[in-house]
Length: 612
Image (cartoon, rainbow, N blue to C red; front, side):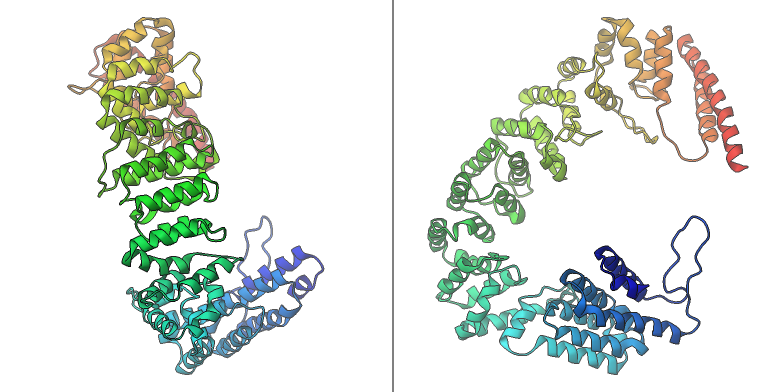
């Protein structure tokens, strides 16, 4: 079946055949080589080896067939087939009967032109790192010999190994302790390059690309040893000529040394780069890689962005590494003003992230400005649905941090923020959207500061009409968690007298409505308001109030048998009734208990049927 699939003219069948080969080569302890799938109906009788010899023969047959097919497969499928062999080399190489076959294959693959030598070397390093101490001595020596051949000892080979690769396994020893096996090699290679520039020159083409995984570290070590920066023009020229997969990783490491040693010269060099058609696009990244941005550098990046040379996304990198910590407040505000004026919503989300780190980090040295902060928090780009909102998982967190800081610093302006929040409360795909968003806690702080004024604003959006916004505001006021973990809602921050005044202005439409979103809790506690009980005392003679309060209390979830849940609920209600003197409350409990008893009986019937 595998041969039929891999020799088919159908690409889909060949891809399915490759997946089957991958599955057939996966290591199993015993039993069926291919685990039984979940199938409705009769289970297939799968082949299972009776002896280890049969098992190893099965592995050899699939392994050798796949190896033989490599040259005849189309390029994409050939890469996948090669990856299948390399991916299964470590688990199958454990078997003494198969280790020679696996080592020979990996060695052979390393000599084929279409196979990535770095990937092969990575597999060998992983095998020796994780399994070397437990392998038979002759097997380990074979792997070590292969690693030596793959790594090589000349400058170019060592560059490819230690600068072109960044493997996790060389960062930890066998006990899991963090080490850095690559650093001594990187330093030695940098020294060799400085002493003999002819060694470095042939490597520059790929050093200026993403192939140089350790390019930044190598560039930094190179810069430290190149006292007169004699290599600068050569490295800069390589950066200019880089095309496919170009990267400023290597150049950034080299220029960081210049920044640390002579910042004025670095500034002048970056000024010249910003005028060069081939280099100016790299200026933002090179600036960030210094580790600390000066005002002059920030304005340079801003100018390139304003001219459309630097992409708006370049500003995102300056969030990391404390890069903006050295910027003056004036220079930083120019960045934010630019981002807020940009038509792409993504710019406002970058501004939010930068703002949070610049003003609210533990070591922040600047005070949160009043007007600019309010403009950021109420930016239309943050309040409207956008792709940026969906992809920026930290946006609501940063908005909330900034919002709370603003409310505490400028309480007199917080009602302006409340107006915006209520207008856009719960809008999907925006910063204030979603059910129980973190951002709503900012409105709660405003409510604590200005309970009367904020409540008046809230009532403007409660409806009618009772739209999605009103529904979400109700849930926020009630504060309950659907799965029974009751949380105090924002209603607890409002003086009851203000709520009763609002209801009494239109009892027919508001009494039942309030009953639908008060916290679904019954309790007696000195100094605390039981909203459900108070609603019943004041308006419980109305049938629509009692009905809606029952519906409110019935919006819930639970674990375990339904009948048991309702029984426990009935028991709690009856226990509360024993000490209750208000007739409205007693009547409501009686009506609710009557409903619960019917539901208990229905639940029991359904549970008995399920058991049967």
